[in-house]
Image 1: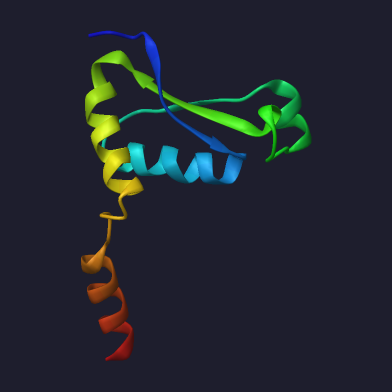
Image 2 (image 1 turned 60 degrees about the vertical axis):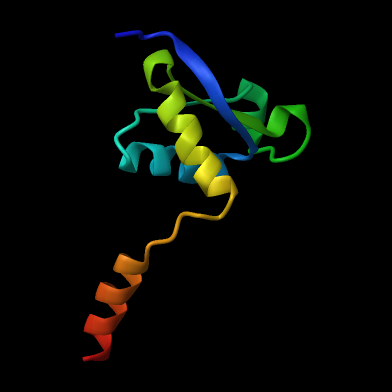
Length: 91
């Protein structure tokens, strides 16, 4: 098992980075966020200091990239969540 971290996605700001990290982790893929310290300290979301890298271990790269490609194409929907949660509220 490789513990070397590799970049799989870059976004701007901590909020979208945490959402993407959560998506990966919800699918069993541990992820780490990396941002320049000044950007993280001041909460920057623009420019080079606002970029946040999302890293996974090398052995999970292909799996993470496939999931992120689905996300980018808009193919991730949770109809089961919507159906079960909101239908129960309507009853």
